[in-house]
Length: 248
Image (cartoon, rainbow, N blue to C red; front, side, top):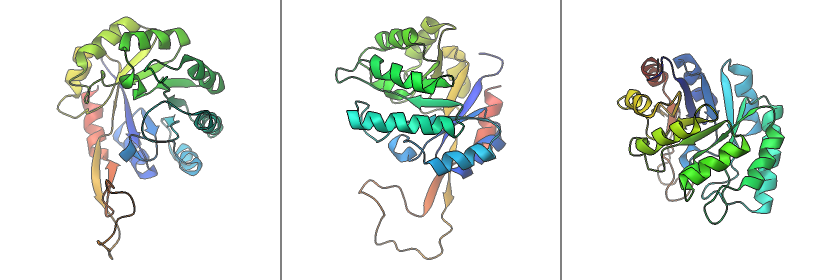
């Protein structure tokens, strides 16, 4: 295990960003709607978070939930959001695009990388939906992507550790392979030790009760699979501190 691993915490609120920083995170991945796996944060959230944080911010560029095969119109939105994130002070941008056949969309990825330059690019867990991880890694290496976030193409990185370790070995110093997905205090050290990764990604989340004293429980403000109205999933400063201690 490396002496000290970089710790990235995924968040979707300013309160969580501040908790991550206070807990010792090195970087936050700023999103909206973590319930959908993370979407592009609003300009207001990014601007205020940038004003309040000293640590690095990786801004998600994802126009909708679901798959990672985007229409031309959706791609135009991604380009505009990326330009906005860059202007608002993001240190890293995070995106991923696939072709219908499950290969990396190298053409569009290259276009987004050109817009992002000179800030760093993370290719997110769209990688885990690619048809062949080694083929996908080769494409990302050829493109010059800085980092890939992966659970090893499994539901959790613990299940995918063997693949993550092989990706770390193949990428060498040319690309950072950052494990994420189901990281907890119980498995963080093991993940770092067995994969050889130098960065790790997690949510370190807990729940905070709503400040509402009046509660109408007859309705929900979303679809059938909506998150609870009167509690919020937030980054937990104590859990971030625990992650930080375990990561060195």
